[in-house]
Length: 433
Ligand code: CAO
Image (cartoon, rainbow, N blue to C red; front, side, top):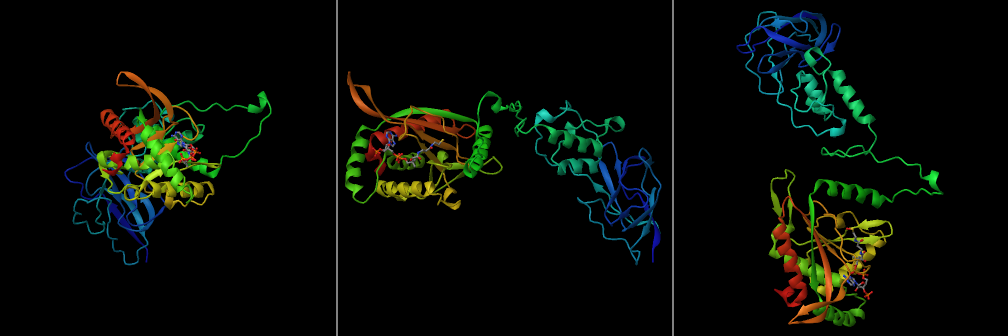
């Protein structure tokens, strides 16, 4: 049978005459046990008072601004709990011990409001000029904001004394969504929106959708480009001897249909450099505070396909010889171009190589394939006059471009890595070390 229950302010420690800053229910509301009823604010903390019963709100005895103390009557509630026994309180965080209650009043515990977790940053261009301002908002509003990824401090409050209301948070989100796409990147980047141009005004056009691969890789490239501080270090490796050896191998293995290009030597040389400089074979963990050093050597190789760039991974390159690597490179690049590479085959890479050497160009700045920390760009080797023993000699020089994550790798380390790599390529005996 329904029974009218009184809900009183529970034990709130030594506080007296505490302000009610929010009443979360109204007469006629059907509530569950543990639903929050009011928010109290002391000079130190805000606390939500949950209902000990399920039922329908019959009468509310307080309003915003009232001062209450332990035992003050908050509201009357028509309990739907047949037995009339209070439900077990399950506060958000460890509550203060519940007091011995008055005969008709239910023992309840307050829910101290936990410090809001760091919310994802809303693009700054969408934020009103409230930076640094101390936000006044009830715990319920803070929770709502947190759930929606809004920092309360960024919302202009329209309530009493600038208090942020539910409507303020909703309006803030609406304003954010109404901004043109691309108006701002994540991570607080302030950028202008892309101009919307009617290209047809200037001549005939044809519109084609981007390939699926380009859409996926584009989003990843964009993230990596804007979130990783890239530096690119350049060098040239003297591959005169290496290339002579490569040509010999090429002739030898052509019968087996294995094409030995400089890339196979590069994969092997990169592994030797990674072994020498383990920092380059690491990744930042999710917290961004630890480096995860890998004890395996899986090398990603960028492959140009008609549908866009793919980066299949050549596994355990440290355990394979140059001819084996050349054979596998031929196979994975052919399969990538036939769209036969699986997602799993593109995962687990430690370091990537992007070779444009077969096409041309002198140098470029490759984008790191996160969570890897570095990538090697390779351009076309050309014969150059190099100064040696007081004379100029013709040498085949291979341009290398090493992009690295400067959060982890220092410039000096990158220079040492690329110089070491060049030495290995210049003297292929080092591959065996
Ligand atoms: N300098 C001079 N010649 C080179 C060279 C270099 N650095 N690299 C390759 N070559 C030569 C090869 O020896 C081969 O010569 P032959 O035809 O006379 O034998 C020719 O160029 C073509 O090589 P290839 O491109 O077929 O083979 P590869 O092993 O060098 O590369 C692959 C394979 C899959 C990496 C490549 O085909 C490819 O797709 N490259 C593009 C990668 C890309 O798009 N990167 C950009 C990503 S943006 O960061």
